[in-house]
Length: 235
Picture 1 (spheres, rainbow, N blue to C red):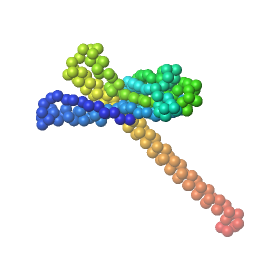
Picture 2 (picture 1 turned 90 degrees about the horizontal axis):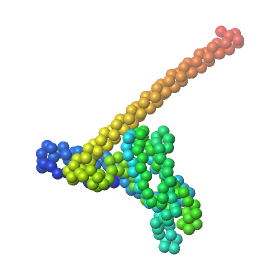
Picture 3 (picture 1 turned 120 degrees about the vertical axis):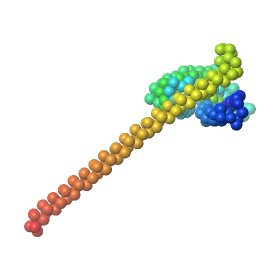
């Protein structure tokens, strides 16, 4: 999932050293933009799950809306209020951090406490519309991670921030998100290194075991042949 985010920077001429630094910072911030929107089709009793890699202590906001298929119009129409969606979120340790029933359109929010792959699952709570809708739903889902989950217009109105103050706050929060991403990548690299070392160690011990088994079989074969020749009085 991808989303576009624009940042307007007001400062010295691009040719200056500070201008180059600002442009580099903006380019870096564009690479860490996370979040996006999609839609998918599910049956009213079907469960759809998504995997999202999230750093620790990161807020995630998901907005969704559902549509039912109208056979007469041959198109999807907004779902009736009686149709609800159940949202369940599990952390990398398979612990449930969110399990709640929502309406046909709504928003869910959670904060990660463990870095790694989080599982976000959605399914309908109703089967009484199956005959009417052909058992199919269209779900529009928009997931925003980190500072992209913040409503800066609301923050500016609440804290009475000027445009410059709002931009500075936005950049500060984006830098904090970059630090979280870097820490998460370091954590992943550490886990990969530990897995590689563990695998290499197991391969080494398995090679040593194979060598010992071959030596033991060779010694046993030599003793067996010696006993055979002695019994036949050939030696």
